[in-house]
Every structure is written in C-alpha cells, then in structure tokens.
Image (cartoon, rainbow over all chains, first blue to last red; front, top):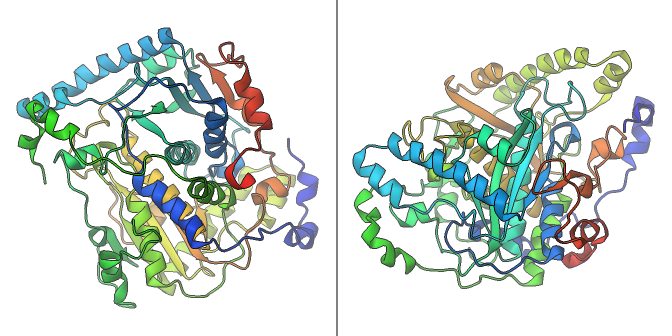
Length: 260
Length: 260
C-alpha cells in the first residue's frame, strides 16, 4: 500500500502541480442543499416504514460515509449491514437489557418519563448498520494519532455523520442506538473484541421527519443559544473585542441560503 | 431548562401532532449540493490565504456546527475562536514540540519523509477554532450515554464534521491539527482540565483545494475499495447472500447527482 519513494521532499514541486478542484466556490443553490440537510437531519426512533431501500441509494450513502476525513488517511471504518431478523432480535435484546439498567439511573419521576420514551427502531427499520473502528489498521504508528490517541475513533464518527447527512438528503431516516453494551453488540455481530463498534444505526424510509429534535419539542432540554457557547481567544472570554459584530451576527443572522 | 411535566406518557398523542417537515424528500439539485460538499472537503494544511472571513460566513458555519446531533440533546460543545497572534504562537509551539516527538516514532526513512510534510496552518490561517466537549454539561446522567460513555465526545466530533462541511460549501479550507498534547492545548487556551479539546481547526480561504486527499496523492496510503469494508449480518461475511447486487452496485455506481 505504501509508496514512500514518491514522498521524497524533492517531489514537492511535482505535488504542487497535483490536480486542483475547478469548482472552488459553490453556488448558493449548492450551499442551500448542504444547509437544508444539516438543519433537517433528525434522530429517528419511531417513524420507520418497512419499504425496502434501493441498493443504488444505500450505495451512495455508504460511499459518502467512506469519504469522511480520517487521521493519516487510515479509513479505520467497516460497515456491517444487518438485514437478518435473527441478528436484529439479538441486538434488540441487548438494547432492552441496557435500557432497563439505564432507566434505573434516573430518579423516580424522571425514570417513569424515561421508560415512556421510544429510543430505538431496531426491529421496524429495514436495515441496521454498524459503523466500526479498527484501531490496528495501517499499523501501530499513524500520522496525526501520535498525541491524540482517540483520533481514529473520531474518524469513524465523521463517517457516521457523513452517513447520516447523506441518508437525510436521500429521504432516509437514521437513528443512532447508543443504549447498548459494547460487548453485547460485538457478540450479536460476531465482532472481534478489538473492533470498536462506534455507532449502531437504524435506517429506513419514514412516515415523516419532525421539525425539531424530539427531546427539544418534548421539553427535555432546550437548544442553547449559540452565542453562549462561543469564546474568543481564551476559554471563558465571551467578549469579542476585536470584531464586535460576530456575536450579534450569529444571534440575528437569518441570512442562510434558503432561509433555514 | 427541564420541563418533565410535558413528557407525561398521556401527552403521546399531542407529540404525534408535533410539526413535521414539509420537505421530506429533497430535489436532486439539493442532494447534489450535499454530495459535492462531502466529496470536495479536504484537510487543508498549506494553501491558506490571509483574507479575512466575513462574520456572516463564520456565523453560518458555526450555526451549522451547533446543529450537529448530540446525545440526550446535551450540546456539549463550545467554540473557542482564536484570532490573537500570541495565542496562535503558543499553540504552534505546542504543535512543534509534539511533532518532533512524533517524527521520532517513525523508522528512519519514514521519519525523514514525515519531517518533510506540511501538517498544519496555525499561523497562516486567519482564524483557528477549538471545538470542545464539556462532559459535565446537563448533569451526570445523560439519556443515551449510560452504556457508551464516549457518546458526548462523539457528539462534539459530529459538530466538527458539520463545521468542516459548511466551511467547504462557503469556500473555506479547514485543517484539523491533532499533533498536539491535550494539556499544552488546554494551557494555551486557558481551558479547565476537565474540558476536552476535541479538534483544533485552522480556518481560512485558500488558493486552491486539491482534487484528492494529499496523503492519497502522495502515495502514503490508497483509498480502500468500499466493497472491502462492507460486511453483511456478521463481521467477516462479505457475501451479500440476500441481495447480490449491492456490492457490485457500490463498485460501479457513478449515479450520483452531479456525477461526483
């Protein structure tokens, strides 16, 4: 796989001549497509329909996931596509076990509420997909993972987010099931213990997408105003002394292409 | 922030009536905008221009990051926007230290190659942004983080990927600097030790975007064919017995909107 000879510093000029993208700036309609996807993506639990997903559609979504950034270009992900009812049943069983434990962690009133929430669509969605991270891929030393050891895990998360966005643009709902013990999931999928399951996703067409995240609509938590999350130059400094406009710009800016 | 009374199971009917999205399916041109962004996003190290980033543009990109999925809707991220040359110098110093150590981890020939690579644009890019994770936000028990303790870190990574994609659609280059020790970065940004810096990003307009990832063009590693990364129902099972077409569809499919 490696061709270190082509990496000789003397080749620098050659690499400066590597093909560039022609389309450096995007049209407003193209930006609009991205923003529409980002703002309309939802975590879907309860609206799945059994309709099959065409292979061409699933292929595009997986291809988009595979074009996520990865540390040292290690592409540490695999995609385990689950259609078998038996395997789904096993995963669902593992969810139920973990979810019962989780419900007990909340205080009595909240625990009751927790138990009323629909938190997964494992059996109803036609396809489940597990996106994983193989930490040993490409060997022990990886460019960019020498200080931050979690970078390979984070790369697989970027693949999850690409998958999620592409799915939304294709009209597919995705729900991330995280209430499950790692070992139980590995066993259900026949996965070696050193492969990290990053995300178990329920995927399918849906009856509808909610306008807002369900936990927001249902009053569990509000969306934090963006300006409360921004600091300038140092942690805790929320005053933008250099350019006073940025914060208010954020608060008032409705100037998205397409007005999302 | 919490209004558990609105979460009563008896309210279920009410929540089924929560507003739905009108635009469930996207037009081909909208999907094209997303795919174009995903396939043209690059990790930029060496092509930054000093041109200032308009506040309206940066606002949109941050707003997109803030609309990432987050476990239990906890929105664990902050955005530290670095424009100060002093702070950038400190971060750059921390990079140089970590990078020297990293170079020594590779064998002699590869170490020489490693040292020739341009791996960051901290000082050249007009803005650096650190996206963080506050693991204590919204309290100790978080829906969806009871089994997978890393879910809050992964949420912040989703914000990074949203940021990266929105930046690309706005014509901005982004480079993720991961060759840096966490503590050194926390100190440079005045960050408490329990705040996790997930990504330190260099952001700015660029002279050009490369057609392909630099590590691919330079022969460090190849892109793995997607079909080698797909398994069906069980880890290691690369035969799609139920629907034979999927793998070949992936390999041959050029059927993206816009033909990316």
